[in-house]
Length: 306
Image: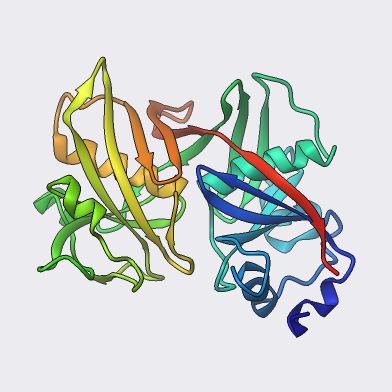
């Protein structure tokens, strides 16, 4: 056994995914299980561990400092999604992960949630409202913003991205959807298919703590029956290339809508290597534009560390 996992002996876990973005999940309501960076790396190792893009710990908000801070203004957020990337770093939010998190809570009998009902979930990017739907879950991801708003307004792009397989650096747009993202528009299918994302792309200027990098290809035509469609691949900060990224799908749709200009729709389908996600933009009760992310969540296995 990997020495980093000795303290986990007997711990029950589940393995789940949202459109191929996969996670190891553990229930730790009292916040007693140490989740060190080295343990996360060992768990996520696809050869020597279980293998995953990240680890999600389900903790009662009252038993975690970040959760207690949230419940001061949102006491209804009983559960906190404590998420770590596969390299052990902490992530603010994960759009695919929060759907799988709620499915995990349901499967473990920790919550009850009927179709059409909504669960508030604490995250490091604030409280997210997750609705149970017939196709999985829909998440109000909250308000988005440009990371470099003055550059975005003036030029429509704010950075350059250098990546293996792209001959020259490409212009990009940086957007926060709970996590930081930098989106590059590609010209054709071969550029998307031939991307080499083993190495982390270089973004200049970079967001303060770095960003995920999405490569988006608009369909031709972009809009059909009022829905815009794009395809996307992503290099996730702290995880490498993944089959999907929920917050990244939101950012890619936002950037493409921005570039498409006036008249672009608010309903988007984002095709990722692991499946399809739906992104909708709407005005929330606060009068600001919010993002709704919809997609499946699947628990594929349960096990015990030995």
